Amino acid sequence: MKRLLFSLIVLSGCSRYYYRPNAVNTPLFTGGGQVHVAGSIGFSGQSDNNSEHWNSTFANVQGAVSPVNHLAFMLNYSSYRYTTDRPDTASGNVNASAHLLEGAIGGYYAKGRKFKLVADCFVGYGAGPIWSDVNMNVDRFFVQPGIGVRSPAFDAAFNLRISTVNYSHFSSGRSVSYLQDHDLIDNNGTRIDGRTYTFAEPSFTVRGGYKFLKIQMQAVLAQDLNNDVHWHYNAFMYTLGLYFSLEDALKAR
Image 1 (cartoon, rainbow, N blue to C red):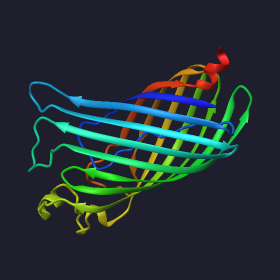
Image 2 (image 1 turned 180 degrees about the horizontal axis):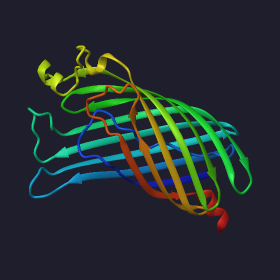
Image 3 (image 1 turned 90 degrees about the vertical axis):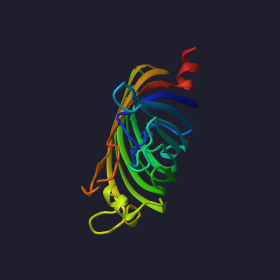
Image 4 (image 1 turned 180 degrees about the vertical axis):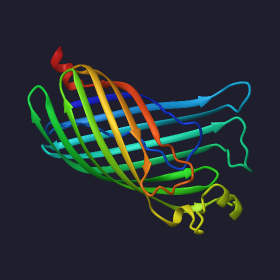
């Protein structure tokens, strides 16, 4: 059984950053032998006569499979690109890009007939490079519990992803004063790659339609649990898209 999910993502944010929450993979499995695939693209930007013109674009590809009942695996890929027509090396406003590849394993339990209540939890790891005013790699461990409901016409889910983020292979060619001014070195003299950061990332997903074709909306938040991250990170992402189930489409023929 196969399902295909294609989403158009609209990102709320106006500049490059060193971390942002990617889209949350929410498969809502109800039994073994199911495969879900998600593809998403998004953008934001600014263009007027009185300021710089910039654009940020990103894409997510998500896959999930449940080979047997109660067991599931995820594989996610995310990319991000920021471009500006007024790059300023001195201020750090330069073109940037990032990539993240992650995998996860988890379990789920589904109960019900027409309306199925689904509880699941995934544990995963991801890594990838960031190229910006500084270059570095990011590693992320996450735990993602969730609960949701599936029905022929309506799906809804809440997930709370807890992510621990580390940076490594830091390189910049920047002065110490520049790194301090951009909070890449904190008041204690610790560089961004010298400690672990923890984010709580709740997400809300709603799908509405009929059987194999549904409109999907998702909001993902990111909150620094240490309350001392001052470098750029994006705290909100909103997604809008379509959910398509090939399995249900074949049944409806």
